[in-house]
Image (tube, rainbow, N blue to C red):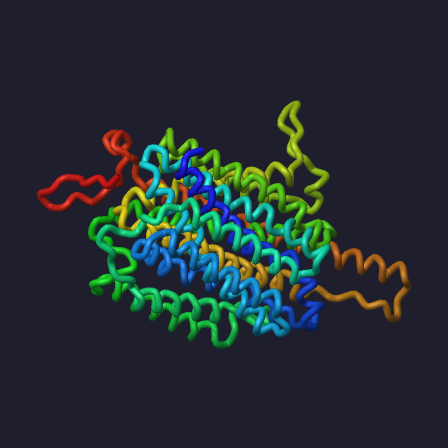
Length: 516
């Protein structure tokens, strides 16, 4: 193994640590609730543990990605891993909910830069012809974290409690720091370092923070948004407009679009956003489906979800290999179509999904396993081509921030997509059950009450099934729309493939420039 392969392996270890921490907390919610004595009727208090992490993740990512262009990949990786250690210590030792959320925000900020900086490092070290395959491997490390995260959390928490899940991060992060220090090259910063767009980063972070706050509803059964939701979202929209205006007129920008082909760049970001929405909807609603309709507990829900989670890294590796041969546009289009087909199949699940397989002539396939694997495989396939497409249309000096924008789009899709679709699904559920009378055992024979209770449960399950079916049908439509958007990514020319360079906008009267 040569030095650059070892360097990207060290970056991949850092990516895996951040990915594990993204998903691990879901599997230890019950222990956190009991330890911090959160009332079971106020579970909305624990949502900032997730949203705080995601906010830190997406808000810091573009700024830290640009900082890696300015100061070098190695420096930023080391700083983020050091912050990861600090956040893990704060989280593991927290004795109040506020301190726990603070630790999770620190972890989110630290984790936010690990994936884009490592992808930018891969772009620095490999030419375009091989880059998609390497990016696929890095993407597989990210998705492997999503596979192992819930199971990893359950296994460690069973032995050490939930705090041990975060204490284990400390030696692992220190090991990653040693590996990065030894094998990652000190180069990687721009030959002529640019300034960091602090104002643009602050505007974007403030817009995202207010959007998260506006979508947070402490009483979701009464209405989809809280009383402050629409005004707060309006202010967030205003800050987003200010961010766009700043990026158009400022001298120092998060990403300079003067030499970027905007159509494929924005198309790739749009597809990433849709893929993120589909991913988080699956993680949340498949687990809820398993618990509410299939009678599974937390562990059982995670085990069912593994069908989807295992398919993700397999799809990421497959997508990287295929993109290197067929091109980014074809693989991204095909991946979103495959994912859309998987969600369409999921939207047609009956309550007895475990006992009603797909029958294809002489072939019988388990429905739940097959459909989740199809959706996971499709979403995994788009990771490498989307990252490669974004990096291909920006100059090398902006690889870090471009990678950050791609991942940020995906995380924003995760955050906003699950909030919007879940709010819509919850409203649909309450509308379907608004006139459903609750059976009472008073003044009637036991046989009559049992019959009414059975009818009530059947109607309730039917409403739940309709809610989930609608959510996954909308998800399938989003994936189909994203597949069409992927066609705007554009294909590499023969000259670009042979040169291994980056596709650039052609200046007036000039020639296409290629940066190795």
